[in-house]
Amino acid sequence: MPDLGGHIRRFLEELRRQNASAHTLRNYASDLEQFLSYFTLHDQPPPKVEAIDALAIREWLGHLYEQRLTAVSMRRKLAAVRSLFKFLMREGVISNNAARLVRTPKAPKSLPVVMTAEQTNTLVDAIPAAADKLERLFPARDLAIFELLYGCGLRISELVGLNLDDFDFGERWVRVRGKGRKERQVPFTGKAATALDRYLAARSPAVAGERALLLNHRGRRLTDRGARGIVKFYARMITGDSSIHPHSLRHAYATHLLSDGADLRAIQELLGHAQLSTTQKYTQVSLADLMAVYDKAHPKA
Image (tube, rainbow, N blue to C red; front, side, top):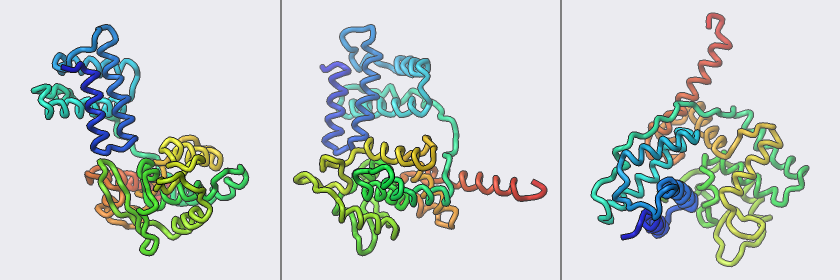
């Protein structure tokens, strides 16, 4: 019978067969490697998975807490362990999912900091001039990244996963593969269409068989890490704010749609949220903005 490390390798291989995204595989591999390391720190060889009960998993979470990990990180790592144990139950390796008995750490309830429409447009519109001043190699690609992130509300993994044949330029729709490989159709703006036209006209040749829309300097698919670095680079250079990241543009997309009267269910579909409750946080953001305006403007506030 394989040890814990062997089971983890089998689980990751199963995820690959299911065409899990590279981002998901990387996170699961990292989280489960840390889980394995904790149990093999003092014990050799690695323990049998049957010997890891709910108490042992709680002690592991306590260890993570002592390492000053955030509740969000701890929740993600516990989710990876639960998925591993669920897989092992399906395989008949264990009869009980001990990870299900462990309470999920509570994450602090915080609202995302959202740029205003004016701030977002100022940032995106400044990309061409900044790219020219900084002598960027692929200015048209860099602008297309921003226009798609803000114009479609994409996750960074969804952006870099786009292929050329995902676009319907006539109807201005793009096919997006979200979490769990779920597909959705998202419209893109006229500005995004213009940016894409300019990028495709200047796009460097891709290596043979490469279908990706966004390419790196080697002619291969741009990675999510590479795209994230591009966004943070421009945001820092243009605004001086190092806290702006790709998800900031997704937050702005959803909040601005809601502020302009879009239906919450429609926003849920556009964002690819499985649960409406995930989308509802943008309602809270809009209410918070409304209260800020009220407090500032009303003489009795």
